[in-house]
Image (cartoon, rainbow, N blue to C red; front, top):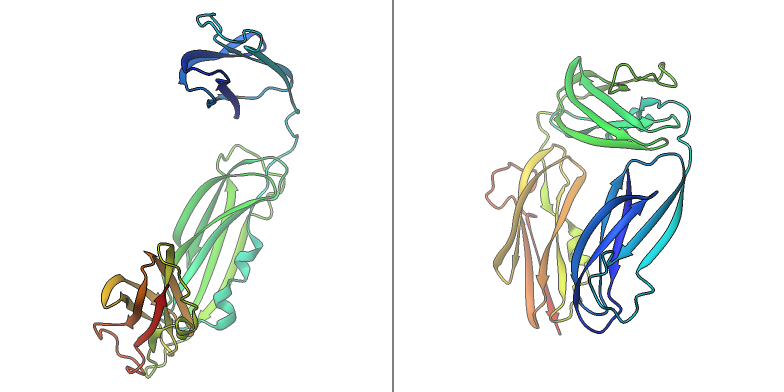
Length: 309
């Protein structure tokens, strides 16, 4: 499907409502009208299923001659369009190779960790097509997605899984969405990954705190400018946990949220604020309700002071 543009311009000195018409190979494809101020333009588009070969486009302003214009000689414009022949070949759907080396394998996986399991569908063929990928974990389906994928590209999404101790098998199976559609290679549709989740140390605990890097930020703001106030929660402990973090600006709560944070990792976001002149303070509080037993309860708060000129 191709979008063919329609655009009408008023280069005169008074406003007017005018019609516009577009022709494709001698057949009217669009007809409409707009109220146009002087020196302005308005545009839209028309969907067209392209066919191979040369085509002639023609646009006409005020096609029925209803207006008296300063210049009647510029009401028509023509252009030629060539459509290349459709590529010959087949799609080739396969699970993305990157699925075999997820980032969480590098750091090891422990019971209770929150893992982002990806589904990624690649088209290795030379024509686009609709493909399906099914993701299973230990024989149970986690997700199924169908996407239109162009040749040489891929599409992906994710699924959050709370890791359980033991050995596990991930399996991705790709196919054409329509079983009647052949693929260039039918032997690359399956990818498997086996991994082990270690049992959690019963003595392991999280250690939740505002990211220390927050203290190193340059809070160099100008009055009246919209800025981003950072929020970042870190887990320096040995166990994953769901925890909240709050941000106070001048002791007023401006953000509160929560995430599941794996040990040794952090998650961040931001809050928009229109900077106001004067002295200010930011205070981040992790696990403010003391809902999580931690290895260190003394580092849950961080405060900085700054001034806006």
